[in-house]
Image 1 (cartoon, rainbow, N blue to C red):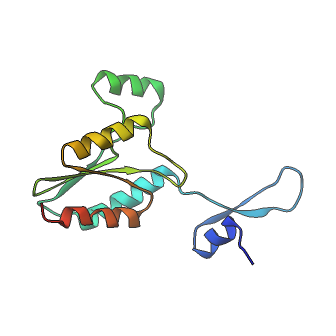
Image 2: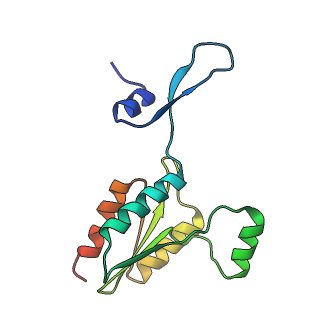
Length: 144
């Protein structure tokens, strides 16, 4: 028997919550999709434990804050499409990581920046989990 996506997610141990149905029917379990902010925090905690000098990393907080903050950042020179996380390693090696929750996709600007990274012999990857980030870090261990 085929399971529903919610049943699959529950069996994988994802956190669930109960969602009321307005029609008055019984409540049913629904899967809470991890927000991008929570994903960022989990990845930051992970990178703090695995990235050590001479490697270094940072995150770039472009999102949130509304139109006023967006206008200020734009006036200061912030460009669209840059990855959420930058990791620098000897070699020299540069790894840009764009984090997206399930169902998220790269914007045209992010695709353009990704191509620019590759044009500069750097790496740009899309990750949806801490496991994806861990896998992407193998790029930094490859010989130059």
